[in-house]
Image 1 (cartoon, helix red, strand yellow):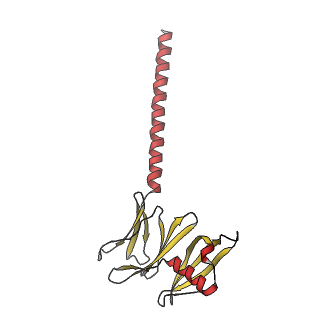
Image 2 (cartoon, one colour):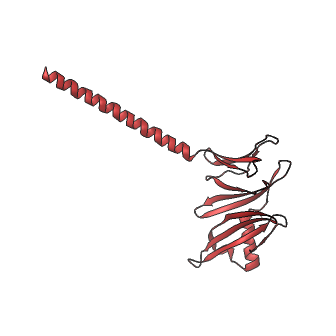
Image 3 (cartoon, one colour):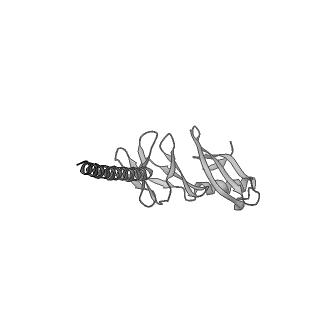
Amino acid sequence: MGFLTQRRLTMRCRGARRIAMRFLMATAVGLSSCTLSTLAADKETPSPRGTFIITQHYEGNWTSKLHFTKKVHPEITFTDDYPWPALFHVSPDDQWILQVQKSGSGDNISFLYHLDSRGRLRRMEQPFGELAFGYLQHAFGVPIADLYHTGIEFTGWGLHPAILRFSIHGSSAKNGGEGVSRELIYDLQKHNFSTP
């Protein structure tokens, strides 16, 4: 009788262990899928005046769309998608959008858009950061061909006058530890760069 009781007890313990292990495995799988879905969750950037929301959605790459909150204009899909999400900076009047997009390890590219009253989104033809580096080369003789880890970082908007403030950076391939790091201003009306 004592032997049967011990055997039943051992069987029950083994069964309880299996149930506990299944529960732990299910919990671990659930948490990992929850973490993956959180990492790839849609990213939203609302405009300051509430005119629109920029949504980034991940499906192999990140796709960006501009949705008008009052549905007065159709949504706009940005032309390119990327392996990384972008940083979108919208001007206080909801008319300008700066997209800073990671393009590699330590590098980014950037695009400047203008949204008109008819709901048309126009992108500056040349990438914004590329234009800014061209300005540095022309105005200050900065040898941009020797730079790596290049990009810009948004600083702020100004409305009177209408300006975009940002910093621009790049490391020198020839001289380790050197390179360029400057604050710049872009005049949104005159379409030119200057230093503060």
